[in-house]
Image (cartoon, rainbow, N blue to C red; front, side, top):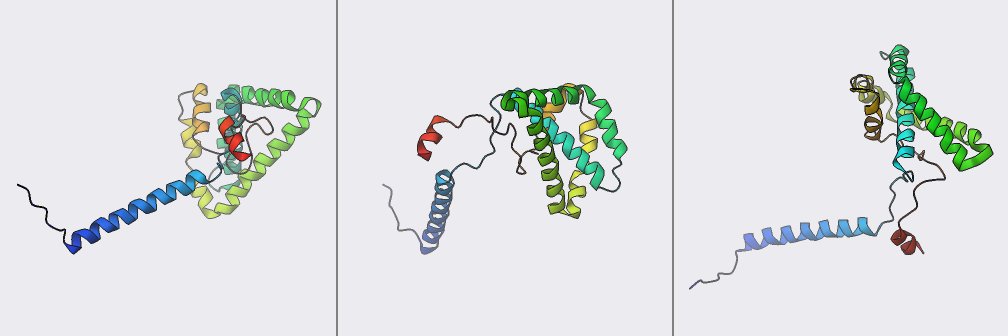
Length: 185
């Protein structure tokens, strides 16, 4: 026969604290679920997404080269030479994207996007101040140590460089899921 003893006050306090933490975690999760999604829009297809991510990486490397002392522009030029094939494909793909999306004004829209991307990356560097160069000094080493040209898109995707106010596939991002559209009504 097992006898149930009333828990001590100390044990009750421990359980109550655990319950309070559990409730707090559940409330926080519920609040996050109830919030509208602020995730960045992605392109409708992965090929377009990849070209925008590579372009963002190229722009970030340019900003690092022109902003950080100790990182020469020669490192940027080495990057461009090594990945020239991928950068040509990226440039062509961005041009095709803007032509498809904007017709005759495609080149103008592409120029606007490239300028906004450079400004966004430069603004991010300014916001971080002296910490920017410390955070990004190894970027050239990382990118130059990739196995080859085909590794560049996957590497660029890991850097999350499009989250600074410039959207990949502007005006042509993937459609929102039907459930999200219905709940927004």
